Each structure stands twice: as C-alpha cells, then as structure tokens.
Image 1 (cartoon, rainbow, N blue to C red):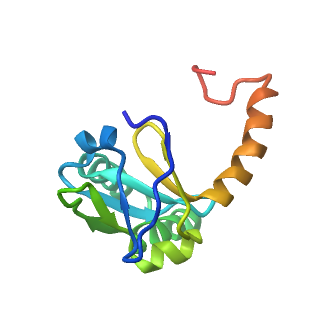
Image 2: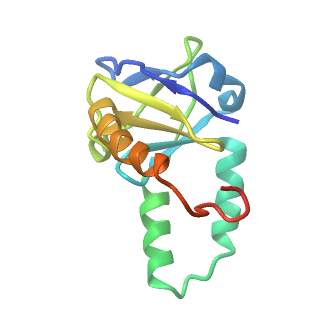
Image 3: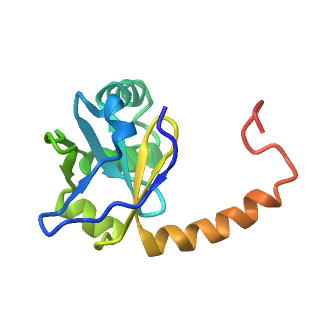
Amino acid sequence: MLLGTFVPKLDEKGRIILPAKFMGDFEGGVFMTRGQEHCVYLFSRREFEALHERARQASVTGKKGRDFLRMFLSGASEEVPDKQHRVTIPPMLRDYAGLDRELTVIGAGNRAEIWDTAAWNEYYAQAEADFADTDEEVIAGIF
C-alpha cells in the first residue's frame, strides 16, 4: 500500500527520485499515466495490469467509458527505476500535469500521484476543508 507525502525535485532530465518506501511496489517497473485533477498516476506493474484487465471487460458502447480509456491508456508509459530509484516522467505527462521543479508525490493506496507542488497545495487546501466538513458517507461502507 502506498502512503504518505514526499517532496522530491524534478531534475534537468525530467527525472525524480521515487520515495524509498515505494520501491517494493515499483521494483517490477512503474506505469505512469494521466491522472485526474491534472496529476500523474503511478501504478505498479501488478496494479496496472489488474486495472487494464478490468477495463478490457467494460463495455465499449458508452462514449464516456471509451473517452476515459482513450485518455487513460494513450497517456500511459512504462518506466523502470534506475539504481538510484530515479524514473523519467515523459514530456507529455510533465506538460499535462504542469510539472516544474517543485513536486509533491503522494501515496494514494493502490497508486502514487505526482503533482506540481503549487497545484497540490491549492487542491489540498480545498479538499482538506471538504474533508473536515464531511457529514455523510462518501465511500460506501467505509466512511
């Protein structure tokens, strides 16, 4: 399970050092793709393959489903961390997420997310207020 918040820097070659505590999940490679709210999602090979298998079973007759899968999979890239735990974020994904030198990487359970730090701080400020004020179930059977 991927948890926590980290603040690595993007180097001049478009690489980041992944948090050491994530490396057990990412040893077999990292799958990056467009995330919602303009971040970059990172999945382990196992998680990405399971997600893809579920997506393959979905109906392709619904336009929203087709559109989502096109955006999600057309932006996907497999990267292999080097010995220093660095991975390159492809230019297309850096542009999509507006990534600059200052980054925030969060663990989100089955995936990690890479955010531009300013975008994360803005998102966090709004989401934290909503989180603190939650008075109804938002995840069925959990909270």
